[in-house]
Length: 266
Image (cartoon, rainbow, N blue to C red; front, side, top):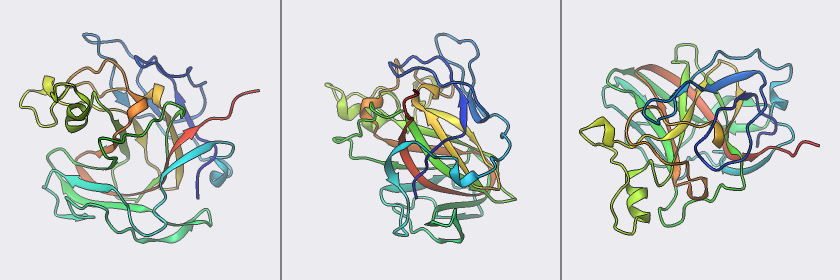
């Protein structure tokens, strides 16, 4: 089941050549629009959840989508899961590729039967991540789309926010090396010095115990404030998704990841 009409976020200025800003509305996420530090935009900040709409299942009406994954075949194809290896429990396990996806106890909105579930206990170093990757030689051209959308909810004893990010040539070591004429990466994933690390574009997303639909425009995404400053977000060559969660205990579900396009306003 694909989403249709998002709960929106504040729009910030962007260094990337994207479409116009999103009008203000009730928010469940925000990219901080504070000042700059040495030319770097302020990092993403998570805002308080807006009241649940009267019909949450209709929160996605009127939007176009290019599906990334709906998990309805009970597998997360091209997806991966990783952690800081300090957890006492984790499902899927650290290092899992294309994990199986359990059925939901109750269908979401009466239609979606499967969603990716991330469960972890005791993360204590930096946390964990999940995402998906395209072949570096065939990235996705998202220039005709407005951003990334997903449905998400959390369990009662879970952390309360995620960082939803994208990989592209300025924020992924292997991806940047693949497109560089000299095969030299723009940044390093595991550089000893913070200033040389890859710092992905993305936004903070608040989690609720009820299913929420979230649509994050590319022009709302920012780097997190460490590592190499990217000149712009290259939406014409998206190499994958990279979503992070911090230390602590986690249980959350993600469904219907997609590129979205808002309808033209008349």
